[in-house]
Length: 238
Ligand code: ADE
Image 1 (cartoon, rainbow, N blue to C red):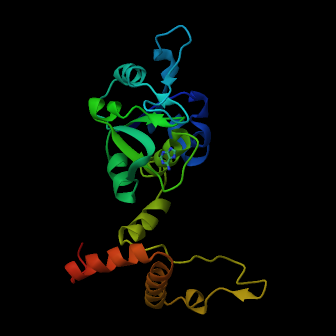
Image 2: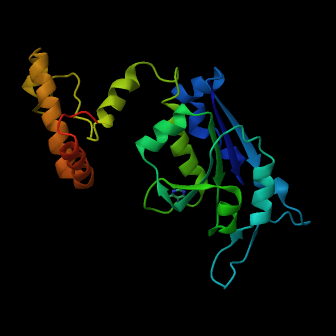
Image 3: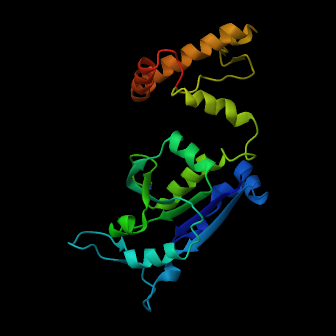
């Protein structure tokens, strides 16, 4: 099954952008995933082709019109795909959600600019709002590219075996352990001795300990969730 992405945007020229190079680009050329863009402005009805208007109640900026967005959305063949809108007001994207999306038929992704979308569109069309983090981008396009990149690398055939190990490690809810490569000594800093020992059990234990320490120190939020999950299932089975 291929992953079919449809992007609704005022800037279709931003796609595939970075997703047209490297492994995602090769996957796109090989048909492992597909990309379609829809210009929202094509669905404007007035002679100025306007897609936005001033906010009800006053205030700065412009708001994307629900009627224009609805026409753009309704022009797309849904094919069982989830309908997503990129917005900082959305639910934060997680690796779990990415994995679900990547395992499905694809996604239809709405990108906003300006102050945002007319709120009525979300309920009217059953749209899931997605945020990629607690900061404000100038539009949803970069957020969509980021989300798609995370999904596409999981689409079968896009990456080789290289990704699977990493994903399993993230599966544990911990940060990845630190990595090193030659030269063994660089600017007076050496690769930890254990990694050069050839003792795979020791290496495994060291990596596990490092992943735990780094997660505890850098991401106490992740660590707490990890510990909570562990207490609930002491066997380690999750
Ligand atoms: N649009 C603007 N900022 C965003 C964010 N943080 N996540 C998703 N979409 C956005």
